[in-house]
Length: 215
Ligand code: AMP
Image (cartoon, rainbow, N blue to C red):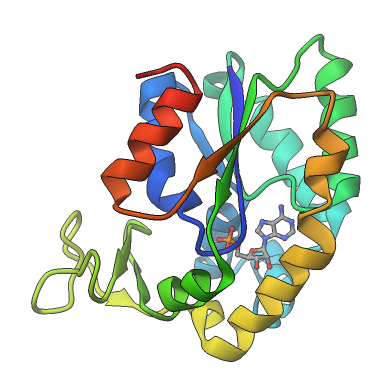
């Protein structure tokens, strides 16, 4: 199944993605994670992406769509994927719908995570990310190990550069202006399930599984 986690920064897409992808038995494809990998290995794409990410802006659609196209044709993605953070603009959504329909495919489900703005800012301000495996933590709700390392892989856990408050505000503005309209572009092309994204990680996961009839 081609499924999609949709919602603003801090709505919990990355936190929920691993379990949801495992339950759907499809790979988790997160464009933000792919850009961060390129950034870490200092590729040309990473350098280009950084100039947008540091300002809370979107990487250009053509670059992002090419990246997704090359990921979607990999062997493990042929029978489905869980998209996280893509599409993030109406042109990206239109490109995806066209790309899929040309291959006789369609989006099976969109999970739209709903979280109030004040909670998004609180969550992102407290978010910490592992430099090794990318696992995310929250200083109070889901802390890393007492020595500040990752409970999954032991690497250092830090605040992402684009999780600083001034960048977060820009990311939320970008979301409202460019990403929220994606839901309208998907209407009629994919079933959209609104899911309450507040509460514990387990509660939200239960709601997502119920929405996807995976309970
Ligand atoms: P994320 O980890 O999903 O919050 O993404 C981090 C940053 O990567 C975003 O703020 C954008 O600068 C960039 N990015 C991730 N996904 C996309 C996308 N689909 N289109 C454009 N830029 C993206």
